[in-house]
Amino acid sequence: MNHDNNPENSTQTSAGDTPIYNAQAAFKYPGMRIIDSPTCPPPAKGEFLCTLLPPDHPRIPGPYSVCLFTAAAHHIAFLTVPTFPRPVITPSPPIHRLDPTNNPLGLGRGIFASSPIPQKGDLIISERPMLVLPYQLRAIELNFPPSFQASPQQKMRLQLQQYNVILESCVNRLDRESRDAFWELPTAAGDEGFGPIMNRMQMNGTFIQIACGEEEEEEVYTSVALSKNISRIGHSCQPNAEWTFDLPSFAMQIHALRPIEKDEEILISYIDDDIT
Image (cartoon, rainbow, N blue to C red):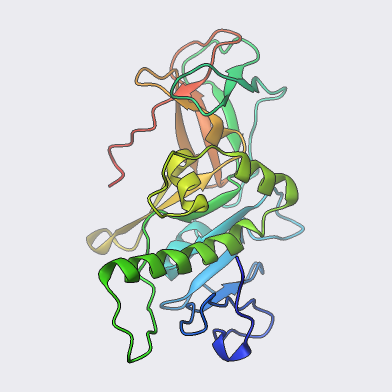
């Protein structure tokens, strides 16, 4: 996507941050900061923050997730989880493998047990997501020229166009291996104008929820996580595994719902009644 590099059309950002430009000179993108300091301030009102979690620091073990935040409380909630960030605990040696799948609800390639998984509750996979993105779109202010009267459909298309440029900047921050893995994720037929990134979010994402604030004023934030391996797991209405998100290690985890035989495909339910 071509960005308009005219400085007059750029957002105002602090020194060292990366401005985002609109493809059309008439409209500005909202302020966006790209910064990875462990002391990175949370996003200001109306701002997008693209950063790494856990924060990139020599004493904090990777890998790291590229995250997009639109609310300060959402960002702070992850940073203040007790014992965050803990190392990711994974089975050693690995007990899963990635292979082609014949599952009609699968994703081309699926995850299979490479050895018997004897007990319900056994950990199969644990990995930090490549990307963590907002589940719900936040309205982006559109700066139309006074003479331009936009229809609701035009406003929606411009909102999606602007949001996709922001998502694209997050995807481009992935390392080469993760970026290739993201673009290899399957897409649904007909993206309804959402674009290739949001299409992959809807098709392959799992959910992260975290509560912020006091009990009387508690607000729950939902994000979509996209992972190299876990996003390849197929769906079943009778799954043999379930997914959870471990906040202290910032890792998506897959646990067995029953004993699983060697070479059996790992399947989860994509349906989450708690997500609206």
